[in-house]
Image (cartoon, rainbow, N blue to C red; front, side, top):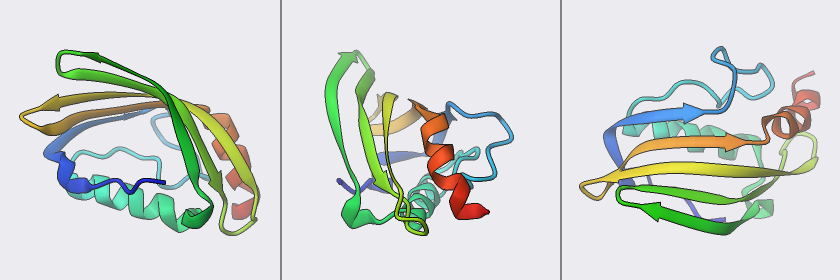
Amino acid sequence: MTQIRPELFAERVEWLLDWPEDGHPAVPWIRPRATRDDVADHFRELAAFHIPERSAGGVARVLIDDQDAVVLGDIQQTVRVTGKQYIALFALHLTVENGLITRYAVYEDSLTVAEALESAND
């Protein structure tokens, strides 16, 4: 799977994830973020819980309107601790200003992600 490059994000980022505000105990990397450094931490934590060599995904469609883009696709991951695989559909809303990502809003099948990780935290 392609590595996310934090340098593509603005210093301040509107970071929105389709999760309860207080997060979910099985998915600790899902929490508020606001800076480029926070973005880098998010993807490091995400990688720590999964086997990167067994990660994949696909993009079904990209829709662009001015500075905004919506990416539709799926994420395929394998949980490091349990070996459990999951596939989650997603929609990603990006806003790009002056060549940098200023909004990163993800809407994904969060129940599938949480269920795959719950047994890892028991």
